[in-house]
Image (cartoon, rainbow, N blue to C red; front, side, top):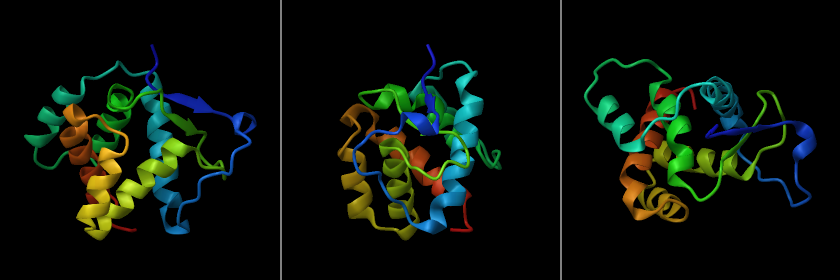
Length: 142
C-alpha cells in the first residue's frame, strides 16, 4: 500500500487552507517532489531508516526527507497528504511538516517538542524529530 497520498488541486477541502511562510515554499516544493518519488518506493520501517541514517557520514542531501516521507504513515494516524509540486495550496500535513522544520531551524526547542507531541505517538517521537531536524539541517537556504 502506498504510504503517501498525492492530491490534485481539485481535492482541496472547504476548510480554511493552512498557510506557511513564503521562504518555506521552495523547501515544501522539494519535499513534494521527493514524496512523488517515494510513492513508488518500498515502504520503510521508521526505526531502521533512522538507524541507517545516524551511522552514515556525508549522506545524500535528500536522505532524511526520503526516509521521513517513506515512514511518515507509520508515525501518524492517517495517510499524509502532499499536493503536486508547484501547487499553491498547502495541505494540513504539509503545513504541519513545514512548521516543524521552521521550529527546528530556529532552534525553538519548546515549540518543536510541542509540534512533535501534538501528532506523533511517543514511540515514534524521537525518530520523527531526528528526521525533521536532519531535513532542516540540509536546507540551509531558509
